[in-house]
Image 1 (cartoon, helix red, strand yellow):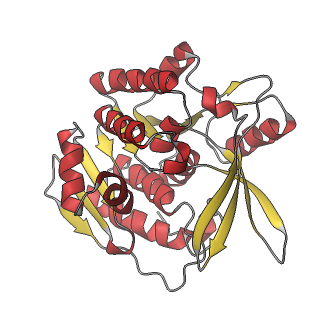
Image 2 (image 1 turned 60 degrees about the vertical axis):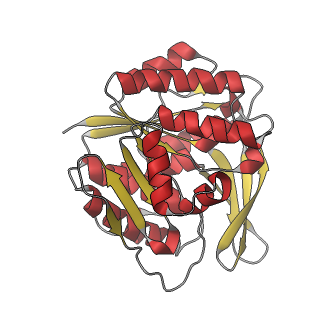
Length: 305
C-alpha cells in the first residue's frame, strides 16, 4: 500500500567528533532522524516529507540540499528571512552522549506560525510524526496551533505518532512540560516513549505503568523503549508483547538510538510487519546505529530490510 509520512520538527547542524581535535559537520535532529530511517526502509512507493522552517542563509541552503539528498521531501519547508538553523555539538564519554546547543535564532521555532501551510502538509499525509522536542521549541501558542491540527488529523483517521522525547533543558517550567507532553499524547494514535524519561519525569514505577498512563490519555497503541531491556508493545489489535534488545559488543555513540528505532519500526509496520516483527527489526537497526559515530548512518552499515 502506498502512503505518505510527514515528520514535523527541527533539523539542526550537527558537529561531531572526528580524528584528533577535529569536528565533522552533519545535519540531524530527532524528528529528521526518524524521517531519514523511515525513508531507508519504506517501500519506494511511499513518500517521506519533512516539515520545518529554515533561514535564507548559506547554511540553510546546505541543510535543504542535504535533506533532499537523503530522499526526504522538502517541499513543505518554510524559509524565513533573518533566521538560521540551530546548531548542536555532541560530547561523548564511554559511548554516552551529551550536547551543547546554539538555537536562539532557529527558524524551526516558528514552524507552526503559518497554520495554513501546516494544515496543508498534514492533510496530505497518512502518517504524521512529531516529538516532545517539536513541542518544546515552540511558544505555548504555537504548540497549541500544532496540537490542534494534530487532533484534527487524528479525528480524521490519520495515524499520528508521538515520541515524548523529554528534554527538560528545553522547557522553562516542569509543570508546563508535563502538561504539554500529555497534550501531545492526547493528540496521538501511537505514543513511543522511553521508559527512563517517563520514570524520571512522571514517576512511573514500571513499563506497565507507562503503558497504562498513555492508554488513559487516549493512545491506541504504545511502544515503550527501555534501552538494553528491550521494547514492550501494547497495541489494541494485539496481545501485549516484549521484544528483547539486540546485544551490542561495543557502544560508540548512542545518538539517534531511539530515533532510528522509531523510523525503522514505522517503516516496517507500514510495510505490513506485525508490531513484534517490526520492533525486532528496529532493535537491530538501533544496535547498528550506536556502533558508529553520529546520528545518521549509511544504509550499507545497517541490517538488510
